Every structure is written in C-alpha cells, then in structure tokens.
Image 1: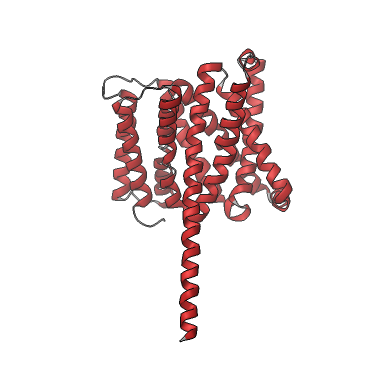
Image 2 (image 1 turned 180 degrees about the horizontal axis):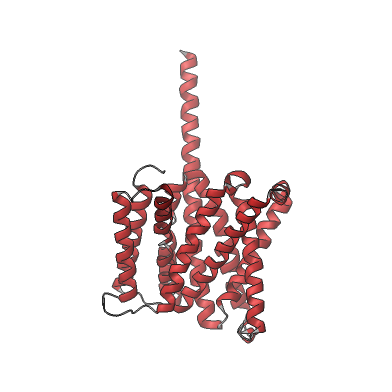
Length: 326
C-alpha cells in the first residue's frame, strides 16, 4: 500500500512539473509572438520618421540577431556549429533555402509595412498558414478537409475586406502593399516547411538552425544593401541623420527584441507546448502589431481592417485545430 501511495505522489509531482512547464511554454510563446508585433511597429516608426530603406532595416536586424545567435552558440553550443559545418552538401543547400526564404520574408514584411502599416502587414502574413496547408494537400495528394476549406474561405474574405475596404469594385490597399504582403506569406510558408522537411530542427535544434538561417539572411541583405548604395538607392543620408532614439528603436526594438529575443522565446515556447498550440499563440502577433501601431504611432484602422483580423484568427483556429496532424 505504501508503494502505491509513493507512486501516486510521484505521479502528482510529475503532473505538476508538466503543468508548470506547459505554463512556462505558453508565457514564452506569447511573449515571443508579441515581440514580433512590436518589431513591426518599430519598423513603421523608422520608415515614417527617419526615411531609412526596408533593405537597411532588414540588413541591420539580421546582423544584430546573427551576432547574438552566434555569440550564444560559440560560448555554449560550439559543438553544434562544428556539426553543421561538417554536414553533407545536401543539408547545407537546405540551409541556403531556409535562410534565403527568411531573407525575402523579412524584406517583404518591411516593404509591406512601408506601403501599408504594421498591423495590415502582419495580418497579411497570416496567410502563410493557408499556403502551408495547400502545399501539404498537394504533396499528400488529397483535398482540404472541411475545416481547412472553411479556413480558406475566411482567409480569402479577410484579404478582400482589407484590400477593398468593403467596396469590391475598388482596390483600396496599395497594389504594391498587397504584392509584398502575399510574397511575405509565401516565404514564411517556405521558411516554416523547409527545416521540417529537411529535418534541420530535429538534427541540430531550432536555436542553432535558426541562427545559421539568420546568418544567410545577414549575408544576403548585406549584399543587397551594398548594391542599393552602389545604385544610389540606399538613402545613406537618412542613416547618417538618425538620432540616438532612432538607433535605439532600430537595434534595441527591431533587431534585439523584435528578432533575436522574439525568435528565442517563441521557439522555446513551441518546444514546451507543441506546434499546434504554438501556432495559435502566434496569433498574438497581429494583435500586438495593430495595438502598438494604434497606441504609439497613431495609425487608424477601419472596421473592415479589424474584421479582416478576426477572420484571419478564425482561419488560423480552423486550420490548426481541425483534426490530427498529417
């Protein structure tokens, strides 16, 4: 009988530990997703008040995040860098695809903000869930399930509402903003699918794999910005005229909090709570971006914008909660 009581006590202790771990995971994922939204507001502030280019913002945020990622890995996970360096060519090519998609994703997100605002850009980014679902259906050679089809309708309706503001005969959202927003969503889907399909997270861990992907992003954006400067399009005068607060927003808000810390917290949270719950918690991002843009930047959102946000959240719930993962 004593043994049974001990087993019950051990089981209760284990359940308490799992519950505590789950709650910590929720907190980490919520904080990470919320900081992604803050990064969008920081980018909008930099574009509107300082006139820096989206490519410069992308280059700086990826550079700072890469330095922090590799700073942690060099001091605490050097063995993982050696393992990645010695990996076969096929794996390194997957890292290039992963990092390339991350680069285009960050640049397209910045361009969407430049043409629209942080809240709209983040809502359009949520279409990536639809692209992931469609790709899975094509590769698995099956039609979308009922909940997935309903999610598609919600996503389409949300995009139409945001782009037309309820007037179906007129495109109110700038065409360039819609283009970059859709490209951003596609690249997010590639960025999410590639490491899973190639087994990069399973083999090297999400932190190390994301750090290497960020390094590829840093190199790509650095080269692209150098080309912009050579063509006289990099707005160096805007960079030179930035004050201390502007640099604080760029490095502290956009790069450190909005990129390095947000990725670290969110990925740690997903590791604790799972990908499905993590995806739902990621819905905090557009809410955070919209609230920050309204409160701190004075961005006005119409009823159609908020309706589109609600439909996107419904789409996300339908796609991620319906049925078992395939």
